[in-house]
Image (cartoon, rainbow, N blue to C red; front, side, top):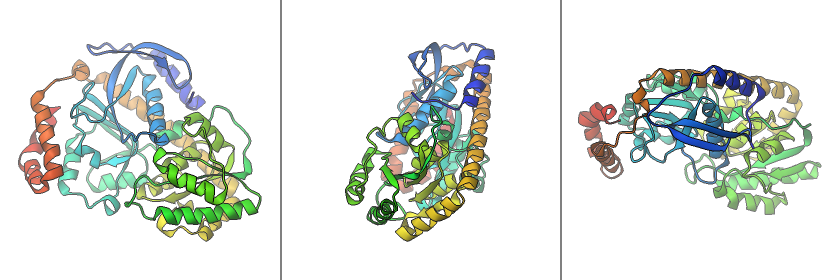
Length: 409
Protein backbone atom coordinates (compact mmCIF):
# COMPACT_ATOMS: atom_id res chain seq x y z
CA UNK A 1 0.00 0.00 0.00
CA UNK A 2 1.02 3.61 -0.38
CA UNK A 3 2.01 6.05 2.31
CA UNK A 4 2.73 9.68 3.03
CA UNK A 5 5.89 10.85 4.80
CA UNK A 6 6.40 10.28 8.52
CA UNK A 7 5.97 13.97 9.35
CA UNK A 8 2.71 14.00 7.40
CA UNK A 9 1.40 10.99 9.34
CA UNK A 10 2.27 12.53 12.71
CA UNK A 11 0.61 15.82 11.77
CA UNK A 12 -2.67 14.24 10.78
CA UNK A 13 -2.68 11.76 13.67
CA UNK A 14 -2.39 14.64 16.16
CA UNK A 15 -5.04 16.65 14.37
CA UNK A 16 -7.39 13.67 14.13
CA UNK A 17 -7.04 13.13 17.89
CA UNK A 18 -8.23 16.57 18.78
CA UNK A 19 -10.79 16.92 16.00
CA UNK A 20 -14.40 16.83 17.13
CA UNK A 21 -16.73 14.35 15.51
CA UNK A 22 -18.58 15.80 12.55
CA UNK A 23 -22.36 15.49 12.66
CA UNK A 24 -24.32 15.46 9.46
CA UNK A 25 -27.59 14.62 7.83
CA UNK A 26 -25.59 13.14 4.98
CA UNK A 27 -23.02 10.50 5.98
CA UNK A 28 -21.35 7.71 4.13
CA UNK A 29 -20.34 4.34 5.51
CA UNK A 30 -16.62 3.97 4.97
CA UNK A 31 -14.91 0.61 5.40
CA UNK A 32 -11.76 0.04 3.39
CA UNK A 33 -7.99 -0.09 3.60
CA UNK A 34 -6.35 3.32 3.66
CA UNK A 35 -2.97 4.26 2.18
CA UNK A 36 -1.21 2.82 5.21
CA UNK A 37 -2.83 -0.60 4.87
CA UNK A 38 -4.95 -0.15 8.01
CA UNK A 39 -8.66 -0.87 8.12
CA UNK A 40 -10.77 2.23 8.45
CA UNK A 41 -14.19 1.80 10.03
CA UNK A 42 -15.87 5.15 10.33
CA UNK A 43 -18.73 7.28 9.13
CA UNK A 44 -17.36 9.82 6.71
CA UNK A 45 -18.91 12.83 5.04
CA UNK A 46 -18.62 12.92 1.27
CA UNK A 47 -17.29 15.81 -0.74
CA UNK A 48 -17.22 15.98 -4.52
CA UNK A 49 -13.80 15.25 -6.01
CA UNK A 50 -13.22 16.63 -9.49
CA UNK A 51 -10.13 16.02 -11.66
CA UNK A 52 -9.30 14.88 -15.17
CA UNK A 53 -9.00 11.30 -13.87
CA UNK A 54 -8.00 9.61 -17.14
CA UNK A 55 -8.45 5.81 -16.96
CA UNK A 56 -5.19 3.91 -16.69
CA UNK A 57 -3.21 7.04 -15.82
CA UNK A 58 -0.85 6.39 -12.89
CA UNK A 59 -0.47 10.09 -12.07
CA UNK A 60 -4.22 10.65 -11.83
CA UNK A 61 -4.65 7.56 -9.66
CA UNK A 62 -1.85 8.67 -7.35
CA UNK A 63 -3.36 12.14 -6.98
CA UNK A 64 -6.65 10.64 -5.84
CA UNK A 65 -4.94 8.27 -3.39
CA UNK A 66 -2.88 11.07 -1.85
CA UNK A 67 -5.82 13.46 -1.57
CA UNK A 68 -8.03 10.75 -0.09
CA UNK A 69 -5.39 9.96 2.53
CA UNK A 70 -4.91 13.61 3.47
CA UNK A 71 -8.57 14.52 3.76
CA UNK A 72 -9.69 11.07 4.92
CA UNK A 73 -7.76 11.65 8.13
CA UNK A 74 -10.19 14.46 8.85
CA UNK A 75 -13.32 12.35 8.45
CA UNK A 76 -13.97 13.28 4.82
CA UNK A 77 -14.41 10.94 1.88
CA UNK A 78 -13.57 12.21 -1.59
CA UNK A 79 -16.24 10.92 -3.94
CA UNK A 80 -15.14 10.97 -7.55
CA UNK A 81 -17.58 12.53 -9.94
CA UNK A 82 -17.37 12.82 -13.70
CA UNK A 83 -19.61 15.89 -13.71
CA UNK A 84 -21.34 17.70 -10.87
CA UNK A 85 -23.93 18.81 -13.40
CA UNK A 86 -25.51 15.36 -13.15
CA UNK A 87 -23.97 13.95 -9.99
CA UNK A 88 -23.42 15.58 -6.62
CA UNK A 89 -22.65 14.20 -3.16
CA UNK A 90 -22.75 17.40 -1.08
CA UNK A 91 -22.41 21.17 -1.40
CA UNK A 92 -18.60 20.92 -1.12
CA UNK A 93 -16.26 20.33 -4.09
CA UNK A 94 -12.50 19.80 -4.18
CA UNK A 95 -10.76 20.33 -7.52
CA UNK A 96 -7.43 18.54 -7.65
CA UNK A 97 -5.28 16.77 -10.13
CA UNK A 98 -4.11 17.67 -13.57
CA UNK A 99 -3.81 20.93 -15.44
CA UNK A 100 -7.50 21.74 -15.62
CA UNK A 101 -8.09 25.41 -14.76
CA UNK A 102 -10.01 27.22 -16.27
CA UNK A 103 -11.52 24.81 -18.82
CA UNK A 104 -12.87 22.45 -16.19
CA UNK A 105 -15.48 25.13 -15.41
CA UNK A 106 -17.11 24.32 -18.77
CA UNK A 107 -18.53 21.05 -17.47
CA UNK A 108 -18.29 21.42 -13.72
CA UNK A 109 -21.20 22.94 -11.88
CA UNK A 110 -20.17 25.08 -8.88
CA UNK A 111 -21.45 23.81 -5.58
CA UNK A 112 -21.84 26.29 -2.75
CA UNK A 113 -18.31 25.72 -1.41
CA UNK A 114 -15.43 25.04 -3.81
CA UNK A 115 -11.71 24.54 -3.12
CA UNK A 116 -8.66 23.91 -5.34
CA UNK A 117 -5.89 21.68 -4.00
CA UNK A 118 -2.72 21.51 -6.12
CA UNK A 119 -4.25 21.73 -9.61
CA UNK A 120 -2.43 23.39 -12.51
CA UNK A 121 -3.57 26.34 -14.63
CA UNK A 122 -3.65 26.07 -18.41
CA UNK A 123 -1.47 28.57 -20.27
CA UNK A 124 -3.67 30.44 -22.80
CA UNK A 125 -0.68 30.79 -25.17
CA UNK A 126 -0.71 27.00 -25.48
CA UNK A 127 -4.30 25.95 -24.75
CA UNK A 128 -6.03 29.14 -25.82
CA UNK A 129 -6.81 31.74 -26.66
CA UNK A 130 -9.56 31.47 -24.06
CA UNK A 131 -12.89 33.12 -24.57
CA UNK A 132 -13.13 36.02 -22.06
CA UNK A 133 -16.43 34.51 -20.95
CA UNK A 134 -14.55 31.42 -19.74
CA UNK A 135 -12.41 33.51 -17.39
CA UNK A 136 -15.53 35.36 -16.25
CA UNK A 137 -17.10 32.00 -15.36
CA UNK A 138 -14.00 31.03 -13.41
CA UNK A 139 -14.33 34.16 -11.27
CA UNK A 140 -18.00 33.37 -10.60
CA UNK A 141 -17.07 30.13 -8.87
CA UNK A 142 -16.17 32.17 -5.79
CA UNK A 143 -13.50 29.71 -4.57
CA UNK A 144 -12.93 29.71 -0.83
CA UNK A 145 -9.26 28.62 -1.04
CA UNK A 146 -7.08 28.11 -4.11
CA UNK A 147 -3.82 26.16 -3.90
CA UNK A 148 -2.02 25.60 -7.22
CA UNK A 149 0.87 23.47 -8.45
CA UNK A 150 3.47 26.15 -9.19
CA UNK A 151 4.42 29.79 -9.59
CA UNK A 152 3.47 29.91 -13.26
CA UNK A 153 -0.06 28.77 -12.38
CA UNK A 154 -0.25 31.42 -9.68
CA UNK A 155 0.92 34.14 -12.10
CA UNK A 156 -1.73 33.14 -14.67
CA UNK A 157 -4.50 33.35 -12.08
CA UNK A 158 -3.17 36.69 -10.87
CA UNK A 159 -3.36 38.05 -14.42
CA UNK A 160 -7.09 37.22 -14.28
CA UNK A 161 -7.51 38.94 -10.93
CA UNK A 162 -7.62 35.73 -8.87
CA UNK A 163 -5.37 35.21 -5.82
CA UNK A 164 -3.88 31.80 -4.97
CA UNK A 165 -1.20 29.99 -2.96
CA UNK A 166 1.48 27.70 -4.36
CA UNK A 167 1.38 24.33 -2.56
CA UNK A 168 3.05 22.07 -5.14
CA UNK A 169 1.75 18.94 -6.84
CA UNK A 170 -0.06 16.73 -4.28
CA UNK A 171 1.93 13.68 -5.40
CA UNK A 172 4.98 15.24 -3.75
CA UNK A 173 3.46 14.00 -0.48
CA UNK A 174 4.16 10.43 -1.55
CA UNK A 175 7.27 8.73 -0.20
CA UNK A 176 8.81 5.29 -0.78
CA UNK A 177 8.05 2.78 1.97
CA UNK A 178 11.73 2.20 2.64
CA UNK A 179 14.98 4.00 1.94
CA UNK A 180 17.24 2.14 -0.45
CA UNK A 181 20.64 3.19 -1.74
CA UNK A 182 20.63 4.72 -5.20
CA UNK A 183 22.49 3.18 -8.09
CA UNK A 184 23.89 6.11 -10.05
CA UNK A 185 24.50 3.80 -13.01
CA UNK A 186 20.79 3.02 -13.20
CA UNK A 187 18.50 5.36 -15.15
CA UNK A 188 14.70 5.27 -15.44
CA UNK A 189 13.05 6.44 -18.64
CA UNK A 190 9.51 7.40 -19.63
CA UNK A 191 8.00 8.68 -22.86
CA UNK A 192 4.45 9.51 -23.91
CA UNK A 193 2.44 12.71 -24.17
CA UNK A 194 -0.99 13.35 -22.66
CA UNK A 195 -2.58 14.07 -26.01
CA UNK A 196 -1.73 13.84 -29.70
CA UNK A 197 -1.57 16.85 -31.98
CA UNK A 198 -1.49 19.32 -29.11
CA UNK A 199 2.04 18.92 -27.76
CA UNK A 200 5.18 20.90 -28.53
CA UNK A 201 6.92 18.01 -30.28
CA UNK A 202 6.00 14.90 -32.22
CA UNK A 203 5.98 11.46 -30.65
CA UNK A 204 8.22 10.18 -33.47
CA UNK A 205 10.87 12.78 -32.67
CA UNK A 206 10.89 11.92 -28.97
CA UNK A 207 10.99 8.19 -29.73
CA UNK A 208 13.89 8.58 -32.16
CA UNK A 209 16.03 10.86 -29.97
CA UNK A 210 15.43 9.01 -26.69
CA UNK A 211 16.26 5.79 -28.55
CA UNK A 212 19.63 7.29 -29.45
CA UNK A 213 20.17 8.27 -25.81
CA UNK A 214 19.42 4.70 -24.72
CA UNK A 215 22.00 3.29 -27.09
CA UNK A 216 24.66 5.77 -25.89
CA UNK A 217 23.94 5.03 -22.23
CA UNK A 218 23.95 1.26 -22.72
CA UNK A 219 27.27 1.50 -24.53
CA UNK A 220 28.62 3.42 -21.52
CA UNK A 221 27.50 0.65 -19.17
CA UNK A 222 24.34 2.21 -17.70
CA UNK A 223 21.41 0.01 -16.65
CA UNK A 224 18.13 1.26 -18.10
CA UNK A 225 14.48 0.61 -17.26
CA UNK A 226 11.38 1.90 -19.06
CA UNK A 227 8.46 2.96 -16.85
CA UNK A 228 5.03 3.58 -18.43
CA UNK A 229 2.67 6.04 -16.73
CA UNK A 230 -0.42 5.67 -18.92
CA UNK A 231 -1.94 2.82 -20.88
CA UNK A 232 -2.47 5.15 -23.86
CA UNK A 233 1.31 5.53 -24.18
CA UNK A 234 2.06 1.80 -24.31
CA UNK A 235 2.45 1.79 -28.10
CA UNK A 236 5.36 4.26 -27.91
CA UNK A 237 6.79 2.54 -24.83
CA UNK A 238 6.81 -0.81 -26.65
CA UNK A 239 8.41 0.76 -29.73
CA UNK A 240 11.20 2.27 -27.63
CA UNK A 241 11.72 -0.99 -25.78
CA UNK A 242 12.17 -2.84 -29.07
CA UNK A 243 14.21 -0.07 -30.70
CA UNK A 244 16.72 0.27 -27.85
CA UNK A 245 16.42 -3.20 -26.27
CA UNK A 246 15.34 -1.83 -22.88
CA UNK A 247 13.13 -3.76 -20.46
CA UNK A 248 9.74 -2.38 -19.41
CA UNK A 249 8.86 -2.32 -15.71
CA UNK A 250 5.84 -4.61 -15.61
CA UNK A 251 4.45 -3.53 -12.23
CA UNK A 252 4.13 0.14 -13.20
CA UNK A 253 0.40 0.38 -12.37
CA UNK A 254 1.28 -0.11 -8.68
CA UNK A 255 1.90 3.38 -7.27
CA UNK A 256 4.20 2.22 -4.48
CA UNK A 257 6.17 -0.23 -6.61
CA UNK A 258 6.84 2.45 -9.22
CA UNK A 259 7.86 5.03 -6.63
CA UNK A 260 10.14 2.48 -4.95
CA UNK A 261 11.83 1.60 -8.24
CA UNK A 262 12.44 5.26 -9.12
CA UNK A 263 13.94 5.80 -5.65
CA UNK A 264 16.69 3.28 -6.49
CA UNK A 265 17.64 5.01 -9.74
CA UNK A 266 20.26 7.72 -10.01
CA UNK A 267 18.32 9.80 -12.54
CA UNK A 268 14.99 9.74 -14.38
CA UNK A 269 14.47 11.04 -17.91
CA UNK A 270 10.72 11.47 -18.32
CA UNK A 271 8.09 12.94 -20.60
CA UNK A 272 4.85 12.34 -18.68
CA UNK A 273 4.54 15.11 -16.12
CA UNK A 274 3.98 12.79 -13.18
CA UNK A 275 7.04 10.72 -14.00
CA UNK A 276 9.00 13.84 -12.98
CA UNK A 277 6.75 14.41 -9.95
CA UNK A 278 7.28 10.81 -8.78
CA UNK A 279 11.01 11.27 -9.30
CA UNK A 280 11.03 14.41 -7.15
CA UNK A 281 9.00 12.62 -4.44
CA UNK A 282 11.55 9.80 -4.49
CA UNK A 283 14.44 12.32 -4.25
CA UNK A 284 15.76 11.22 -7.64
CA UNK A 285 17.02 14.11 -9.81
CA UNK A 286 15.34 14.21 -13.22
CA UNK A 287 15.43 15.54 -16.76
CA UNK A 288 11.97 16.60 -17.91
CA UNK A 289 10.92 16.33 -21.57
CA UNK A 290 8.16 18.93 -21.72
CA UNK A 291 5.32 18.51 -24.17
CA UNK A 292 3.31 21.37 -22.58
CA UNK A 293 3.83 24.43 -20.30
CA UNK A 294 2.72 22.59 -17.14
CA UNK A 295 6.05 20.74 -17.12
CA UNK A 296 7.86 24.04 -16.62
CA UNK A 297 5.32 25.02 -13.96
CA UNK A 298 6.27 21.94 -11.97
CA UNK A 299 10.02 21.78 -12.67
CA UNK A 300 10.45 25.45 -11.77
CA UNK A 301 8.63 24.83 -8.49
CA UNK A 302 11.31 22.34 -7.40
CA UNK A 303 14.32 24.13 -8.91
CA UNK A 304 14.73 21.96 -12.02
CA UNK A 305 13.72 24.29 -14.87
CA UNK A 306 17.34 24.15 -16.10
CA UNK A 307 16.86 20.44 -16.71
CA UNK A 308 13.61 20.80 -18.63
CA UNK A 309 13.51 20.85 -22.43
CA UNK A 310 10.64 21.22 -24.89
CA UNK A 311 9.92 18.07 -26.87
CA UNK A 312 10.03 20.19 -30.03
CA UNK A 313 13.71 20.90 -29.23
CA UNK A 314 14.69 17.44 -28.04
CA UNK A 315 17.83 15.91 -29.50
CA UNK A 316 19.99 13.13 -28.14
CA UNK A 317 22.88 15.58 -27.89
CA UNK A 318 20.88 18.04 -25.75
CA UNK A 319 19.63 15.30 -23.44
CA UNK A 320 23.17 13.98 -22.97
CA UNK A 321 24.46 17.50 -22.28
CA UNK A 322 21.81 17.98 -19.59
CA UNK A 323 22.65 14.55 -18.17
CA UNK A 324 26.36 15.41 -17.96
CA UNK A 325 25.56 18.72 -16.26
CA UNK A 326 23.21 17.05 -13.78
CA UNK A 327 25.81 14.38 -12.97
CA UNK A 328 28.40 17.12 -12.34
CA UNK A 329 26.06 18.90 -9.92
CA UNK A 330 24.31 15.82 -8.60
CA UNK A 331 24.59 16.24 -4.83
CA UNK A 332 23.78 19.95 -4.95
CA UNK A 333 20.67 19.39 -7.08
CA UNK A 334 19.54 16.39 -5.04
CA UNK A 335 19.79 18.37 -1.81
CA UNK A 336 17.87 21.27 -3.37
CA UNK A 337 15.22 18.86 -4.58
CA UNK A 338 14.83 17.35 -1.10
CA UNK A 339 14.54 20.81 0.46
CA UNK A 340 11.86 21.94 -1.98
CA UNK A 341 9.84 18.73 -1.72
CA UNK A 342 9.85 18.81 2.08
CA UNK A 343 8.76 22.44 1.95
CA UNK A 344 5.78 21.57 -0.25
CA UNK A 345 4.80 18.61 1.91
CA UNK A 346 4.56 20.95 4.87
CA UNK A 347 2.62 23.51 2.82
CA UNK A 348 0.14 20.84 1.73
CA UNK A 349 -0.45 19.72 5.31
CA UNK A 350 -1.13 23.28 6.42
CA UNK A 351 -3.31 24.10 3.41
CA UNK A 352 -5.39 20.95 3.89
CA UNK A 353 -5.84 21.85 7.56
CA UNK A 354 -7.11 25.30 6.50
CA UNK A 355 -9.63 23.73 4.14
CA UNK A 356 -10.86 21.27 6.77
CA UNK A 357 -11.16 24.02 9.39
CA UNK A 358 -13.16 26.10 6.92
CA UNK A 359 -15.45 23.15 6.11
CA UNK A 360 -16.10 22.62 9.81
CA UNK A 361 -17.21 26.25 10.13
CA UNK A 362 -19.76 26.02 7.30
CA UNK A 363 -23.52 25.71 7.89
CA UNK A 364 -24.84 22.19 8.35
CA UNK A 365 -26.62 22.29 4.97
CA UNK A 366 -23.16 21.83 3.40
CA UNK A 367 -23.91 18.08 3.36
CA UNK A 368 -27.27 18.47 1.61
CA UNK A 369 -27.80 17.20 -1.90
CA UNK A 370 -30.41 19.26 -3.71
CA UNK A 371 -32.22 17.41 -6.46
CA UNK A 372 -33.13 20.36 -8.63
CA UNK A 373 -34.44 19.41 -12.07
CA UNK A 374 -34.47 23.05 -13.13
CA UNK A 375 -30.77 23.45 -12.35
CA UNK A 376 -29.91 20.36 -14.40
CA UNK A 377 -31.88 21.75 -17.33
CA UNK A 378 -30.05 25.09 -17.14
CA UNK A 379 -26.63 23.44 -16.96
CA UNK A 380 -27.46 21.00 -19.71
CA UNK A 381 -28.48 23.91 -21.92
CA UNK A 382 -25.23 25.71 -21.15
CA UNK A 383 -23.11 22.69 -22.11
CA UNK A 384 -25.10 22.17 -25.32
CA UNK A 385 -24.77 25.82 -26.38
CA UNK A 386 -21.04 25.87 -25.72
CA UNK A 387 -20.49 22.76 -27.83
CA UNK A 388 -22.82 23.59 -30.70
CA UNK A 389 -23.59 27.34 -30.79
CA UNK A 390 -20.64 29.30 -29.39
CA UNK A 391 -21.95 32.75 -30.35
CA UNK A 392 -25.30 32.06 -28.71
CA UNK A 393 -23.45 30.67 -25.68
CA UNK A 394 -21.54 33.93 -25.22
CA UNK A 395 -24.73 35.99 -25.28
CA UNK A 396 -26.50 33.48 -23.00
CA UNK A 397 -23.70 33.82 -20.46
CA UNK A 398 -23.22 37.57 -20.71
CA UNK A 399 -26.85 38.55 -20.33
CA UNK A 400 -28.26 35.74 -18.23
CA UNK A 401 -26.39 32.65 -17.11
CA UNK A 402 -23.42 34.23 -15.29
CA UNK A 403 -25.86 36.19 -13.14
CA UNK A 404 -27.78 33.11 -11.96
CA UNK A 405 -25.07 30.45 -12.13
CA UNK A 406 -24.16 30.44 -8.46
CA UNK A 407 -27.79 30.23 -7.38
CA UNK A 408 -28.12 26.90 -9.22
CA UNK A 409 -25.78 25.05 -6.82
